[in-house]
Image (tube, rainbow, N blue to C red):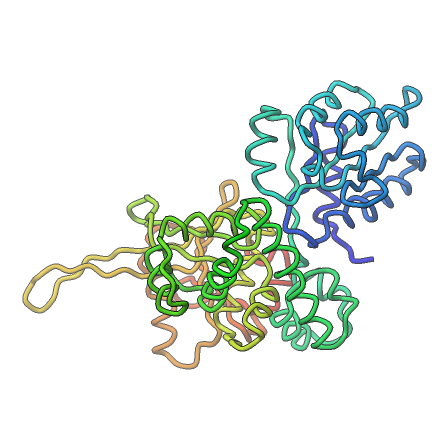
Length: 417
């Protein structure tokens, strides 16, 4: 059993809090396994009896008829036979038409503690927040982090990272050994699960090819600044088909809505304001990105950047791309402005970190390139450079902290040290 202690601890902390616990995340990232295996095992080991756990997997043939909310409600009530405390685990609740009415009704049953999964982010942001007015409690789950992946990997850290950076962290891949098995599974997920789901949910049956080609463009440009006008130009050039930036923007929203990609905005650190465009997209799982382009573009710098972003999100940080604007004067005393990019500005509570992802720093000029933006920030928050290979973390004379990628990924408290 893969340990997913972070998410289990969140579920345990939220037991009997009077809210619907909503486990969200991209399809096949382990939501059902978390509820029906890890959390259920915890409950049984804690003394909860088998008949006090009610399980309904709504995407299975066995429970297909329970997608009718009235039938599902009656089924649940038939399992609650006394005043004991019952744990209700509902998988893929968005398949139930009018599920918000069902869940509202269950909130009034004092001896049911309800946990549900959903794969659509609007299911959370629209229905849970609006319909439950603060009575829906989200637990966002992601594909395996590198730390989770390494806990079941048989090999050294370097080989483990090579495997992870190529195939990603979808849990099912642990069972598959060869490149063919892994690539076939990842392509199946993209084409037969994610794209199919996006097409059906957004009624885009006539646009499947367009969606796929747009995803190809995004896959080839992770870590690069872009926006709908740029993508419109790239798409029309590559596919020789006219597509408007408004349509592209809608398709991008559909990708984000499905948890397949994340959109990251730029933030002017000194001006303390967000910049509307351009922005960056990162894949929820780097293996899905690599499979989409048939493992052709092995770009270690951009792949590393995507993996660092995902790790920061898993740790609960809000993440922006930082921009530092600096005014200079030329030899003729004419003013001009330069912008320096900070790969990640991450926040959690009162903590803030400025992070640069640097695959390698081979000479003094490279050090200057990677750190000049950090040195232009005048506040006291920690400034960090993450290197691919760095075995002993250190601080330089400017107070910038250097840490290796493996240590950053394997130590959940690495930023605080």
